[in-house]
Image 1 (cartoon, rainbow, N blue to C red):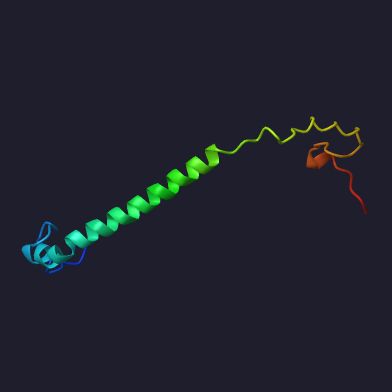
Image 2: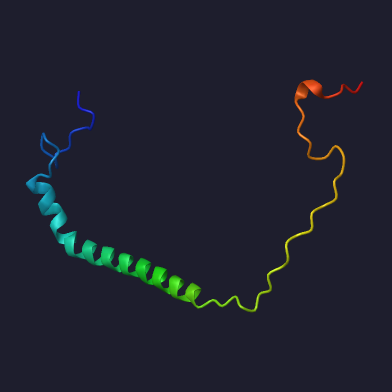
Length: 89
């Protein structure tokens, strides 16, 4: 039993038959033009985005100082094994 169902447009080796090639011929040029247009649009959006981002100037943005370390508070952020935790009842 074949994994892919047989179609009249493909031969026993799953190659295109002459009927499929004839059926697709009228759409070949139109599909190539549509594919080229979509590809060109995607590349132009990408190029525009890269050009727009490259013009950013962050020299007027002030970089803040490093944050001050908080004072040590007991029982916060201390990792203890579960077996040593006190039981509250």
